[in-house]
Length: 153
Image 1 (cartoon, rainbow, N blue to C red):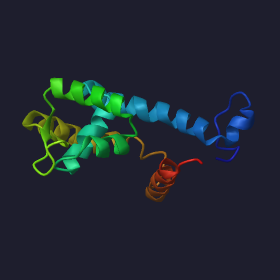
Image 2 (image 1 turned 45 degrees about the horizontal axis):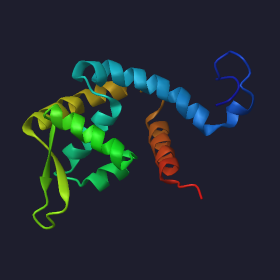
Image 3 (image 1 turned 30 degrees about the vertical axis):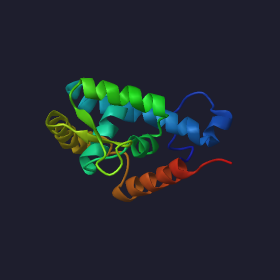
């Protein structure tokens, strides 16, 4: 961001070049947008939305796959899965191949909720259309994915 396009305010010092600071600032805007479009209407947290979208895109996933995709520890994933199972959105079923393994799947109610959330996604994303061109949006997603895949030594 050039100095002519930055918001006026106190000097940021080293924060001008700290990626995490800029991610945190952008998260405020995207979180408010999420709450307005999906969070409040469907009573979903962002991680619950992500879980539903992953399960909607994949017939079934293992807890390990979900933990990796959502960047959650096993205990935190268990809490999330328990909460969504109590809500009636998902079920855990034993693998037919390996009875020690579980698969997580949407219930009919969970699929309906996920479909509602998916339908509300384009209007939510449209709220950000004014600040990024299509090319900038694609580049931002590519760069954020690159950061997310980076594992510091």
